Image (tube, rainbow, N blue to C red; front, side):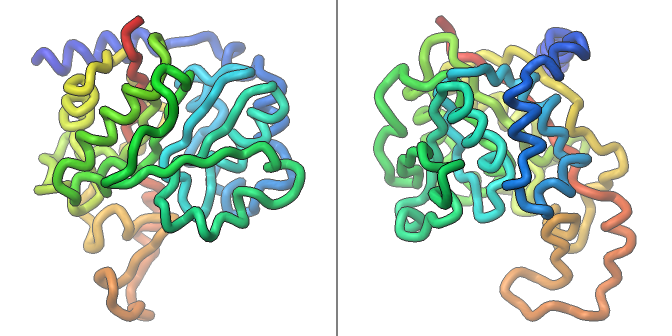
Length: 267
């Protein structure tokens, strides 16, 4: 009951005028840039980048750390040029092994000011204490739950690097109203799990949004959330693809139902 009331209050706090979502011309330019890959642009209808970043509180000139941006670099393609254009700083927090292969993150003048830090189960601080305005983690928390203690360490790392008043932005596949399976092995995490992890580290849940909700996601797919686009898995992980698998049902669902949360480090 307490969590439901907290989420209701957070959802009410997330209401903003439509004009606030389109007022940042630098963000509009970054989203429309021809440098973005076709694959990522096609996903905008499911990921709602402008509304999501506005909800999280992205502003010109901020120091933004994106945790585990991944090979596709969906948010990276928007955030790195935006930071450069507005005098901010974009930092990609990636696994140490990835530092050896980061061509996508440094190609051309557009991404020339991208910085890096190491993020892993055993890594040190993401940066100096109280140095970042915004930490973004999108679709990562379920992975950390498979490694004992990593989800807790992650939240502590985020709290340490954020300035007082800084924001932790979370996008994650949402298990609710179904129960979360052990270790979120199907990729879906309960809202209460995420809120509990963040609060334990010292964060306050400031707002929640239904920007990335998908009521058509039944969350009972044969290969977990990865059955859905964009992964479209058709066989157990590590096994050969099954050419006879019928993707139609899952493609019709689209991308997953996701929680979108904004936490703040107390001032």
